[in-house]
Amino acid sequence: MLSAQQTGHEELAQTRLAVYRFLFAALSKPTPGQHIWMAGPDFRSGLGLLCEEFGLPCPEGELVPGEYTDHESRYLACFEVGLPGPPVPLLASHYHHKEPAPRIIHEHVLFYKRFGVRPVDSLESADHLLDELAFLIRLDELLLAGRVEAESVLRARRDFLARRAARWPARAAALTHERGLPPVYRTLLALLAVAVEQDLALSETAVADLAKENA
Image: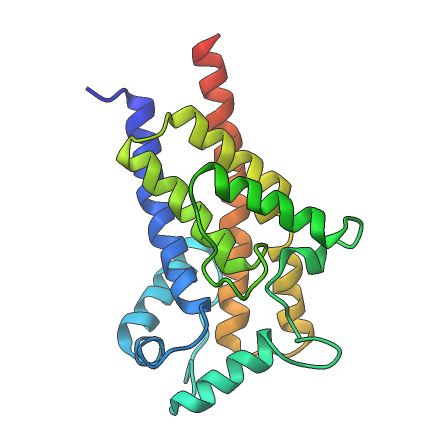
């Protein structure tokens, strides 16, 4: 039988998975299927629920352009292209100017290899937001499957968030306002920033509780 603590970890993992899978899907590079979803009622409803849960305002009106090509172009113009760079890069190394980018990328790769996670897109740098989200999703999947010791997964989550994934989304979210990104992307990045901040706090508490339990 599961202990109360184990049950709590699993319930939290299920909730985190729902949040991060939603953000991963919405912030992924556009596809026709993604466009249909983001233009439909299910996306609007899900976004509204997350905004309510995290205490953020939800954008009104049209969330994505009516045509797929316009949706794709807008995403690329926000996150992928621009001079001297895109308005809001989705790369952790862009926001850590005191550390060399190769060191940041290498540390990401070491985390991924430890838990058998492959990059989402081989053409992107390993410190891309989508890879970070995929890693956090994978940790919760492993926790729920019970294939890896819970303490190992929780410590890895805490360390990855503290070292990397929780350190830059707030800066990216601020840039979405400064550089006038569409409301849906401002909201998604704001949700991400709040989610990873809470995730780090909960992960630190979980590891501390485990240490007490094992003392």
